[in-house]
Image 1 (cartoon, rainbow, N blue to C red):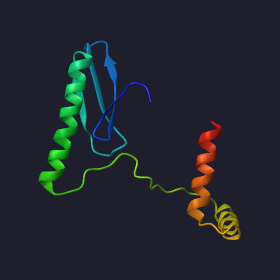
Image 2 (image 1 turned 90 degrees about the horizontal axis):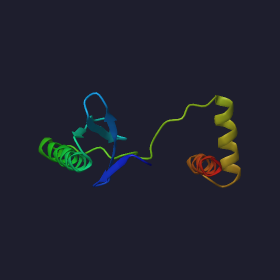
Image 3 (image 1 turned 180 degrees about the horizontal axis):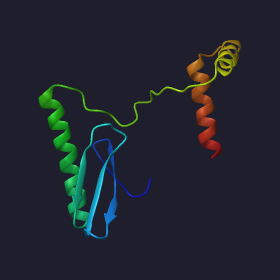
Image 4 (image 1 turned 180 degrees about the vertical axis):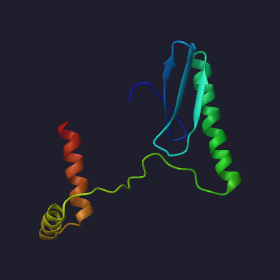
Length: 112
Protein backbone atom coordinates (compact mmCIF):
# COMPACT_ATOMS: atom_id res chain seq x y z
CA UNK A 1 0.00 0.00 0.00
CA UNK A 2 1.38 3.38 -0.96
CA UNK A 3 1.52 6.36 1.38
CA UNK A 4 1.86 4.30 4.52
CA UNK A 5 4.37 4.01 7.33
CA UNK A 6 5.24 0.73 9.08
CA UNK A 7 6.58 0.15 12.58
CA UNK A 8 6.31 -2.78 15.01
CA UNK A 9 3.62 -4.47 12.92
CA UNK A 10 1.44 -1.36 12.63
CA UNK A 11 0.75 0.65 9.50
CA UNK A 12 -0.19 4.27 9.38
CA UNK A 13 -1.64 6.55 6.74
CA UNK A 14 0.16 9.57 5.33
CA UNK A 15 -1.79 12.67 4.34
CA UNK A 16 -0.94 16.30 3.79
CA UNK A 17 -2.96 19.34 4.84
CA UNK A 18 -2.16 22.20 2.48
CA UNK A 19 -3.77 24.94 4.64
CA UNK A 20 -1.90 23.78 7.76
CA UNK A 21 1.27 22.81 5.86
CA UNK A 22 1.54 19.64 7.94
CA UNK A 23 1.70 15.91 7.27
CA UNK A 24 -0.62 13.79 9.43
CA UNK A 25 -2.01 10.30 9.71
CA UNK A 26 -3.42 7.59 11.91
CA UNK A 27 -2.74 3.92 12.55
CA UNK A 28 -4.80 1.81 10.13
CA UNK A 29 -6.76 -1.33 10.96
CA UNK A 30 -7.41 -0.85 14.68
CA UNK A 31 -10.37 0.72 16.47
CA UNK A 32 -8.24 2.84 18.81
CA UNK A 33 -7.35 6.28 17.49
CA UNK A 34 -3.57 6.60 17.28
CA UNK A 35 -2.66 9.73 15.33
CA UNK A 36 0.53 11.65 14.56
CA UNK A 37 1.78 14.61 12.57
CA UNK A 38 4.93 16.35 11.38
CA UNK A 39 6.08 19.28 9.33
CA UNK A 40 8.30 17.09 7.15
CA UNK A 41 8.76 13.41 6.38
CA UNK A 42 11.38 12.85 9.09
CA UNK A 43 9.28 14.46 11.83
CA UNK A 44 6.17 12.58 10.62
CA UNK A 45 7.99 9.24 10.79
CA UNK A 46 9.40 10.09 14.23
CA UNK A 47 5.97 11.09 15.59
CA UNK A 48 4.43 7.93 14.08
CA UNK A 49 6.95 5.71 15.88
CA UNK A 50 6.44 7.64 19.14
CA UNK A 51 2.65 7.34 18.80
CA UNK A 52 2.88 3.56 18.33
CA UNK A 53 5.29 3.25 21.28
CA UNK A 54 2.98 5.40 23.44
CA UNK A 55 -0.01 3.24 22.46
CA UNK A 56 1.85 0.04 23.35
CA UNK A 57 3.03 1.52 26.65
CA UNK A 58 -0.52 2.64 27.52
CA UNK A 59 -1.85 -0.85 26.78
CA UNK A 60 0.86 -2.35 28.98
CA UNK A 61 0.16 0.04 31.88
CA UNK A 62 -3.58 -0.64 31.71
CA UNK A 63 -3.07 -4.38 31.42
CA UNK A 64 -4.81 -5.04 28.13
CA UNK A 65 -3.56 -6.51 24.89
CA UNK A 66 -2.88 -4.02 22.11
CA UNK A 67 -5.10 -4.38 19.09
CA UNK A 68 -3.53 -6.04 16.10
CA UNK A 69 -4.17 -4.95 12.58
CA UNK A 70 -6.67 -7.21 10.81
CA UNK A 71 -7.08 -10.19 13.10
CA UNK A 72 -8.42 -12.40 10.31
CA UNK A 73 -11.80 -12.70 11.99
CA UNK A 74 -14.87 -11.01 10.53
CA UNK A 75 -18.52 -11.80 9.99
CA UNK A 76 -20.13 -12.23 6.60
CA UNK A 77 -23.88 -12.15 6.15
CA UNK A 78 -25.38 -14.29 3.39
CA UNK A 79 -28.85 -15.55 2.67
CA UNK A 80 -29.90 -18.81 4.33
CA UNK A 81 -29.94 -20.44 0.89
CA UNK A 82 -26.33 -19.47 0.16
CA UNK A 83 -25.29 -20.59 3.65
CA UNK A 84 -26.94 -23.97 3.06
CA UNK A 85 -25.39 -24.42 -0.38
CA UNK A 86 -21.92 -23.51 0.90
CA UNK A 87 -22.23 -25.89 3.86
CA UNK A 88 -23.34 -28.75 1.61
CA UNK A 89 -20.57 -28.04 -0.92
CA UNK A 90 -17.95 -27.86 1.86
CA UNK A 91 -19.09 -31.11 3.47
CA UNK A 92 -19.23 -32.96 0.17
CA UNK A 93 -15.68 -31.77 -0.55
CA UNK A 94 -14.47 -32.91 2.87
CA UNK A 95 -13.69 -29.33 3.89
CA UNK A 96 -14.77 -27.01 6.65
CA UNK A 97 -17.06 -24.13 5.69
CA UNK A 98 -14.40 -21.66 6.82
CA UNK A 99 -11.87 -23.25 4.42
CA UNK A 100 -14.26 -22.96 1.47
CA UNK A 101 -14.97 -19.30 2.23
CA UNK A 102 -11.25 -18.54 2.71
CA UNK A 103 -10.42 -20.20 -0.61
CA UNK A 104 -13.18 -18.27 -2.38
CA UNK A 105 -11.93 -14.97 -0.95
CA UNK A 106 -8.35 -15.75 -1.94
CA UNK A 107 -9.56 -16.55 -5.47
CA UNK A 108 -11.45 -13.24 -5.58
CA UNK A 109 -8.34 -11.31 -4.54
CA UNK A 110 -6.16 -13.12 -7.09
CA UNK A 111 -8.64 -12.39 -9.89
CA UNK A 112 -8.75 -8.66 -9.11
